[in-house]
Length: 328
Length: 168
Image 1 (tube, each protein chain N blue to C red):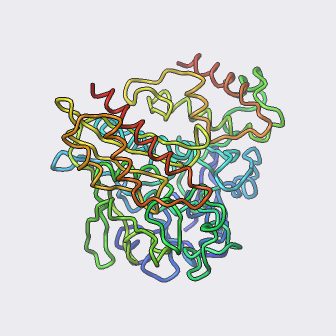
Image 2 (tube, rainbow over the protein chains, first blue to last red):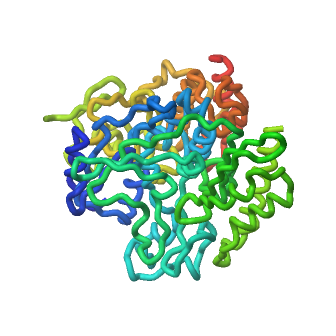
């Protein structure tokens, strides 16, 4: 690692002021950041340790929802009794990611901010517009098995690698952000991550000096909640394709179909047209195909990841079939 | 202000250089070389230790972040004269070949047994809320953060299962 100074923040205000400095990065769990610092992909001049500023509580909200502290760990969140009972898709998504050791350290805020695992991004000897703007994208004509098929640009085809945020997108959770001027703002998870466009280095909407304080979940939505992750190993591997689903069927017809997709884009992918196509209709293979047509209308492969397009279709089919059976 | 980290019950001063990982601190500053450096990127689990009761990868955390914390390493779990139940079981079931991953495997499995006792589900659990049934599938999923390049997995699972079933 390159030399850096280390400062421990005691309060949110302290942390916000420190991370507003050029070259300073906040560190919480550190499982992604320290990995990238060892690879010299990240070379902060200062780390602000925000682990002891609070914001680790998981507590009920006034409207019956749940507020999950940004500094609560992934494990604390996945095993929390209310998350298991009311938001099983979130427990399932978290438990499907990484390993117990990593989930014990990784925080919810850090998980939202984790970087892509694109091989070119993680290797400083390779071109990457995300790491070094203007240097090119090695993946577009290179090794692209993990890469995106939706929402790509000619600058970047990286994926957002996480599982938790895919479930949060299906749940329409909200990200609570403390701003550097001492104020706060709320951003839906669905709008938190960015598409690469011409600014692939910008992965989310956080501005300098902003810190995530919590993620809020709506009042329990019920339904059948599923997280299906397709990967190359049965454990400890990133998603090739994943689907988070909250589905309800009343009188033989879909009354709820909140779906989000991982492993296919630079952000958890949510397309409101899919729910519109499903709601009010009776489940059938033809209907599932129509939903997949909508999802994959603009999908584009880059050779090695072409398989993700039929895989996303089949995974969506499988999840809708499973949800239909569970609801029957 | 001097920072102290408790390692197996003994306080130690945290290192001056913030770059020192908890793993390097344990091996080089404290002199406890049971904890192993494998990949140094959180992928292999050889560096697994127990901090404040939970298992973590000591290579992916800075020692400076741990003042006041209680760290347990393989040396703190048992001794050659008084090995822990898992240490005994690994010997009995031949749960290793070269032995390099073993301290991490045993620290990981030790914490895993408390996770099961606490009723924490895993990706392999059928139900999120109704207790854990100990099975090979559960153990393999829960131990997926610990690699063994010799491939002693079958015996590692047998050793853990033995202890898990006795303590269940």
